[in-house]
Amino acid sequence: MYLISQTIFVSVTFAGIFMLMKVGFVNIFGKPNAGKSTLLNALIGEKLAIVSPKVQTTRHRIKGFLNSENYQVIFSDTPGIIEPRYKLHEKMMHSVKSSLEDADLALLLVDVNENLEEADSIFSGLRLKVPAFVVLNKIDRVQQDKIKQVSDFFNAKAYCKKTIAISALKKINTDGLLHDILEFLPEGEPFYDGDDLTDLPTRFFVGEMIREKIFDLFQDEIPYHTAVVVREFKEKISLIKITAEIIVHRESQKAIILGEKGKMIRQIGTTARQDIEKFLDSKVFLELFVKVRPKWRDNDIHLKEYGY
Image: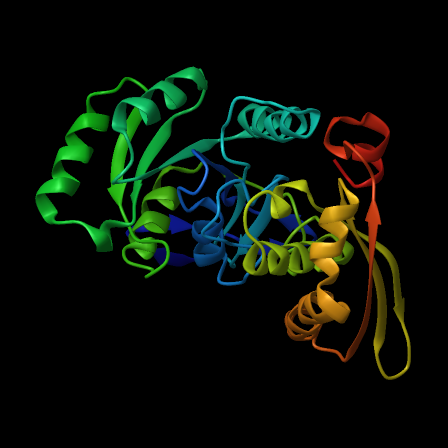
Protein backbone atom coordinates (compact mmCIF):
# COMPACT_ATOMS: atom_id res chain seq x y z
CA MET A 1 0.00 0.00 0.00
CA TYR A 2 1.28 3.45 -0.85
CA LEU A 3 -0.08 6.77 0.38
CA ILE A 4 0.40 9.75 -1.93
CA SER A 5 -1.39 13.06 -1.49
CA GLN A 6 -4.02 11.50 0.76
CA THR A 7 -5.06 9.04 -1.95
CA ILE A 8 -4.34 5.32 -1.62
CA PHE A 9 -3.07 3.54 -4.71
CA VAL A 10 -2.34 -0.18 -4.89
CA SER A 11 0.06 -1.45 -7.53
CA VAL A 12 1.24 -4.85 -6.36
CA THR A 13 2.04 -7.51 -8.91
CA PHE A 14 0.83 -10.86 -7.57
CA ALA A 15 0.98 -14.09 -9.57
CA GLY A 16 1.38 -12.05 -12.76
CA ILE A 17 -1.77 -10.02 -12.15
CA PHE A 18 -1.63 -6.21 -11.93
CA MET A 19 -3.68 -4.69 -9.18
CA LEU A 20 -5.29 -1.33 -9.88
CA MET A 21 -3.21 1.85 -9.92
CA LYS A 22 -3.74 5.43 -11.11
CA VAL A 23 -3.34 5.42 -14.87
CA GLY A 24 -4.45 7.56 -17.79
CA PHE A 25 -3.73 9.73 -20.82
CA VAL A 26 -3.15 13.42 -20.09
CA ASN A 27 -2.82 15.42 -23.28
CA ILE A 28 -1.54 18.99 -23.54
CA PHE A 29 -3.15 21.49 -25.92
CA GLY A 30 -2.63 25.16 -26.63
CA LYS A 31 -1.53 27.88 -29.01
CA PRO A 32 1.99 27.84 -30.47
CA ASN A 33 4.66 28.87 -27.96
CA ALA A 34 2.42 28.48 -24.91
CA GLY A 35 5.10 26.23 -23.39
CA LYS A 36 3.64 22.76 -24.05
CA SER A 37 6.98 21.08 -24.78
CA THR A 38 8.61 22.73 -21.78
CA LEU A 39 5.77 21.45 -19.60
CA LEU A 40 6.08 17.90 -20.93
CA ASN A 41 9.82 17.91 -20.19
CA ALA A 42 9.25 19.33 -16.71
CA LEU A 43 6.62 16.72 -15.82
CA ILE A 44 8.59 13.76 -17.18
CA GLY A 45 11.93 14.98 -15.84
CA GLU A 46 13.65 14.31 -19.17
CA LYS A 47 14.06 16.35 -22.34
CA LEU A 48 11.81 14.48 -24.75
CA ALA A 49 10.48 17.44 -26.74
CA ILE A 50 12.70 20.05 -28.38
CA VAL A 51 12.08 23.64 -27.33
CA SER A 52 12.60 27.00 -29.00
CA PRO A 53 11.47 30.59 -28.49
CA LYS A 54 10.14 30.35 -32.06
CA VAL A 55 6.56 29.21 -32.63
CA GLN A 56 5.46 25.92 -34.20
CA THR A 57 8.51 23.96 -33.10
CA THR A 58 6.54 20.78 -32.35
CA ARG A 59 5.25 18.93 -35.42
CA HIS A 60 4.36 15.51 -33.97
CA ARG A 61 2.49 14.17 -31.02
CA ILE A 62 5.15 13.20 -28.48
CA LYS A 63 4.21 10.85 -25.66
CA GLY A 64 6.16 10.69 -22.42
CA PHE A 65 5.47 8.17 -19.67
CA LEU A 66 5.70 9.10 -16.00
CA ASN A 67 5.99 5.80 -14.13
CA SER A 68 6.02 4.90 -10.46
CA GLU A 69 4.85 1.96 -8.39
CA ASN A 70 1.63 3.87 -7.81
CA TYR A 71 0.74 5.39 -11.16
CA GLN A 72 1.44 5.58 -14.87
CA VAL A 73 0.62 8.88 -16.55
CA ILE A 74 0.94 9.03 -20.33
CA PHE A 75 1.49 12.68 -21.19
CA SER A 76 1.26 13.95 -24.77
CA ASP A 77 2.76 17.12 -26.18
CA THR A 78 0.87 18.23 -29.28
CA PRO A 79 1.57 20.78 -32.03
CA GLY A 80 0.35 24.31 -31.40
CA ILE A 81 -3.17 24.80 -32.73
CA ILE A 82 -3.13 26.81 -35.97
CA GLU A 83 -5.15 27.31 -39.14
CA PRO A 84 -3.50 24.95 -41.68
CA ARG A 85 -1.79 26.54 -44.68
CA TYR A 86 0.08 23.49 -45.98
CA LYS A 87 -0.41 19.74 -45.97
CA LEU A 88 2.28 19.63 -43.29
CA HIS A 89 0.06 21.81 -41.10
CA GLU A 90 -2.87 19.48 -41.82
CA LYS A 91 -0.78 16.53 -40.62
CA MET A 92 0.11 18.48 -37.47
CA MET A 93 -3.53 19.26 -36.74
CA HIS A 94 -4.40 15.60 -37.30
CA SER A 95 -2.01 14.85 -34.41
CA VAL A 96 -4.03 17.25 -32.28
CA LYS A 97 -7.28 15.54 -33.28
CA SER A 98 -5.94 12.07 -32.45
CA SER A 99 -4.86 13.37 -29.04
CA LEU A 100 -8.39 14.59 -28.37
CA GLU A 101 -9.79 11.12 -28.99
CA ASP A 102 -7.87 9.17 -26.34
CA ALA A 103 -7.47 11.74 -23.55
CA ASP A 104 -8.69 11.03 -20.03
CA LEU A 105 -7.83 14.59 -19.08
CA ALA A 106 -6.93 17.62 -21.19
CA LEU A 107 -4.45 20.23 -20.04
CA LEU A 108 -5.30 23.48 -21.81
CA LEU A 109 -2.11 25.49 -21.55
CA VAL A 110 -2.25 29.25 -21.83
CA ASP A 111 0.44 31.89 -21.50
CA VAL A 112 -0.96 34.33 -18.92
CA ASN A 113 0.06 37.20 -21.23
CA GLU A 114 -1.84 35.81 -24.23
CA ASN A 115 -5.03 37.26 -25.65
CA LEU A 116 -7.56 35.46 -23.45
CA GLU A 117 -10.42 35.70 -25.94
CA GLU A 118 -8.30 34.03 -28.63
CA ALA A 119 -7.28 31.26 -26.26
CA ASP A 120 -10.91 30.77 -25.20
CA SER A 121 -11.97 30.53 -28.85
CA ILE A 122 -9.37 27.82 -29.49
CA PHE A 123 -10.26 25.86 -26.35
CA SER A 124 -13.99 26.09 -27.08
CA GLY A 125 -13.34 24.94 -30.65
CA LEU A 126 -11.76 21.70 -29.43
CA ARG A 127 -15.25 20.53 -28.37
CA LEU A 128 -13.76 18.47 -25.58
CA LYS A 129 -15.54 15.32 -24.47
CA VAL A 130 -13.34 14.95 -21.39
CA PRO A 131 -12.73 17.25 -18.41
CA ALA A 132 -10.00 19.87 -18.72
CA PHE A 133 -7.68 21.79 -16.44
CA VAL A 134 -6.73 25.23 -17.73
CA VAL A 135 -3.04 25.57 -16.88
CA LEU A 136 -1.85 29.17 -16.60
CA ASN A 137 1.81 29.17 -17.65
CA LYS A 138 4.67 31.67 -17.27
CA ILE A 139 3.36 33.06 -13.98
CA ASP A 140 6.93 34.04 -13.02
CA ARG A 141 6.58 36.97 -15.44
CA VAL A 142 3.43 38.59 -14.00
CA GLN A 143 1.97 39.96 -10.78
CA GLN A 144 -0.50 38.07 -8.60
CA ASP A 145 -3.47 40.22 -9.64
CA LYS A 146 -2.90 39.26 -13.28
CA ILE A 147 -2.93 35.57 -12.38
CA LYS A 148 -6.23 36.05 -10.53
CA GLN A 149 -7.72 37.91 -13.49
CA VAL A 150 -6.81 35.11 -15.92
CA SER A 151 -7.93 32.43 -13.47
CA ASP A 152 -11.33 34.09 -12.98
CA PHE A 153 -11.76 34.39 -16.75
CA PHE A 154 -11.27 30.67 -17.39
CA ASN A 155 -13.05 29.43 -14.25
CA ALA A 156 -16.22 30.87 -15.77
CA LYS A 157 -15.91 28.65 -18.87
CA ALA A 158 -17.91 25.44 -19.18
CA TYR A 159 -14.93 23.36 -20.40
CA CYS A 160 -12.77 24.32 -17.40
CA LYS A 161 -12.88 21.95 -14.42
CA LYS A 162 -10.24 24.00 -12.57
CA THR A 163 -7.37 26.41 -13.17
CA ILE A 164 -3.80 25.77 -12.01
CA ALA A 165 -1.05 28.41 -12.15
CA ILE A 166 2.51 27.27 -12.96
CA SER A 167 5.78 28.17 -14.58
CA ALA A 168 6.92 25.18 -16.65
CA LEU A 169 10.34 26.73 -17.28
CA LYS A 170 11.00 27.52 -13.61
CA LYS A 171 9.14 24.38 -12.44
CA ILE A 172 6.93 26.49 -10.18
CA ASN A 173 3.96 24.43 -8.94
CA THR A 174 4.50 21.60 -11.45
CA ASP A 175 4.39 19.21 -8.48
CA GLY A 176 1.06 20.73 -7.52
CA LEU A 177 -0.20 20.19 -11.06
CA LEU A 178 0.87 16.53 -10.93
CA HIS A 179 -0.90 16.12 -7.59
CA ASP A 180 -4.15 17.42 -9.08
CA ILE A 181 -3.75 15.18 -12.14
CA LEU A 182 -3.27 12.08 -9.99
CA GLU A 183 -6.28 12.96 -7.85
CA PHE A 184 -8.40 13.06 -10.98
CA LEU A 185 -7.17 10.02 -13.00
CA PRO A 186 -9.07 6.72 -12.90
CA GLU A 187 -7.68 3.43 -11.65
CA GLY A 188 -6.57 0.75 -14.06
CA GLU A 189 -3.72 -1.40 -15.30
CA PRO A 190 -0.62 0.16 -16.90
CA PHE A 191 -0.61 0.50 -20.67
CA TYR A 192 3.18 0.37 -21.06
CA ASP A 193 6.15 -1.34 -19.46
CA GLY A 194 7.33 0.53 -16.38
CA ASP A 195 10.83 0.95 -17.85
CA ASP A 196 9.60 2.69 -21.00
CA LEU A 197 9.86 6.48 -21.27
CA THR A 198 8.12 6.88 -24.65
CA ASP A 199 6.76 4.86 -27.57
CA LEU A 200 8.76 6.74 -30.20
CA PRO A 201 11.96 5.29 -31.75
CA THR A 202 15.43 6.64 -31.00
CA ARG A 203 15.79 7.82 -34.62
CA PHE A 204 12.91 10.24 -34.07
CA PHE A 205 14.62 11.97 -31.17
CA VAL A 206 17.95 12.13 -33.02
CA GLY A 207 16.24 13.90 -35.91
CA GLU A 208 14.48 16.28 -33.52
CA MET A 209 17.76 17.23 -31.84
CA ILE A 210 19.23 18.15 -35.22
CA ARG A 211 16.10 20.12 -36.11
CA GLU A 212 16.30 21.97 -32.78
CA LYS A 213 19.75 23.31 -33.73
CA ILE A 214 18.33 24.66 -36.98
CA PHE A 215 15.71 26.55 -34.95
CA ASP A 216 18.48 27.84 -32.69
CA LEU A 217 20.87 28.98 -35.43
CA PHE A 218 18.65 30.31 -38.22
CA GLN A 219 16.00 32.99 -38.54
CA ASP A 220 13.06 33.83 -40.80
CA GLU A 221 11.64 30.97 -42.86
CA ILE A 222 14.58 28.55 -42.70
CA PRO A 223 13.44 26.49 -39.66
CA TYR A 224 9.89 26.20 -41.03
CA HIS A 225 11.02 25.11 -44.50
CA THR A 226 13.29 22.41 -43.07
CA ALA A 227 12.82 18.74 -42.23
CA VAL A 228 15.35 16.23 -40.92
CA VAL A 229 15.47 12.57 -41.91
CA VAL A 230 17.78 10.05 -40.21
CA ARG A 231 18.94 7.73 -42.98
CA GLU A 232 21.42 5.59 -41.06
CA PHE A 233 21.73 4.58 -37.42
CA LYS A 234 24.38 1.91 -36.87
CA GLU A 235 25.68 0.85 -33.49
CA LYS A 236 29.35 -0.04 -33.77
CA ILE A 237 31.76 -1.29 -31.10
CA SER A 238 33.02 2.09 -29.95
CA LEU A 239 30.39 4.53 -31.26
CA ILE A 240 27.09 5.03 -33.08
CA LYS A 241 27.24 6.15 -36.73
CA ILE A 242 24.38 8.42 -37.73
CA THR A 243 23.70 9.83 -41.17
CA ALA A 244 20.95 12.40 -41.57
CA GLU A 245 19.59 14.61 -44.33
CA ILE A 246 18.40 18.17 -43.84
CA ILE A 247 15.60 18.84 -46.33
CA VAL A 248 14.97 22.37 -47.65
CA HIS A 249 12.78 23.97 -50.32
CA ARG A 250 15.29 25.89 -52.41
CA GLU A 251 18.95 25.98 -53.44
CA SER A 252 19.32 29.36 -51.72
CA GLN A 253 18.22 27.75 -48.44
CA LYS A 254 20.73 24.96 -48.95
CA ALA A 255 23.49 27.55 -49.28
CA ILE A 256 22.39 29.19 -46.02
CA ILE A 257 22.32 25.87 -44.16
CA LEU A 258 25.78 24.99 -45.46
CA GLY A 259 27.22 28.43 -44.73
CA GLU A 260 30.46 29.88 -46.06
CA LYS A 261 32.94 27.04 -46.49
CA GLY A 262 30.56 24.73 -44.61
CA LYS A 263 30.70 26.75 -41.38
CA MET A 264 27.01 26.53 -40.48
CA ILE A 265 26.46 22.85 -41.15
CA ARG A 266 29.54 22.07 -39.07
CA GLN A 267 28.04 24.12 -36.24
CA ILE A 268 24.73 22.26 -36.55
CA GLY A 269 26.58 18.95 -36.50
CA THR A 270 28.81 19.80 -33.54
CA THR A 271 26.05 21.10 -31.26
CA ALA A 272 23.57 18.37 -32.27
CA ARG A 273 26.18 15.63 -31.75
CA GLN A 274 26.82 16.83 -28.20
CA ASP A 275 23.12 16.56 -27.34
CA ILE A 276 22.77 13.20 -29.10
CA GLU A 277 25.76 11.75 -27.24
CA LYS A 278 24.25 12.86 -23.93
CA PHE A 279 20.88 11.40 -24.89
CA LEU A 280 22.33 8.06 -26.06
CA ASP A 281 25.15 7.94 -23.49
CA SER A 282 27.51 6.94 -26.28
CA LYS A 283 30.07 8.41 -28.63
CA VAL A 284 28.50 9.44 -31.93
CA PHE A 285 29.80 10.02 -35.44
CA LEU A 286 27.28 12.34 -37.09
CA GLU A 287 27.25 12.97 -40.83
CA LEU A 288 24.89 15.59 -42.30
CA PHE A 289 23.80 16.27 -45.87
CA VAL A 290 21.50 18.94 -47.28
CA LYS A 291 18.92 17.99 -49.93
CA VAL A 292 16.61 20.28 -51.92
CA ARG A 293 13.01 19.06 -52.28
CA PRO A 294 10.83 21.88 -53.69
CA LYS A 295 7.46 22.34 -51.95
CA TRP A 296 7.95 19.26 -49.76
CA ARG A 297 5.47 20.63 -47.21
CA ASP A 298 2.66 20.17 -49.74
CA ASN A 299 3.80 16.83 -51.16
CA ASP A 300 2.14 13.73 -49.70
CA ILE A 301 4.93 11.42 -50.85
CA HIS A 302 7.66 13.54 -49.27
CA LEU A 303 5.65 14.07 -46.08
CA LYS A 304 5.21 10.32 -45.64
CA GLU A 305 8.90 9.73 -46.32
CA TYR A 306 9.86 12.32 -43.69
CA GLY A 307 7.62 10.79 -41.04
CA TYR A 308 4.55 13.01 -41.22
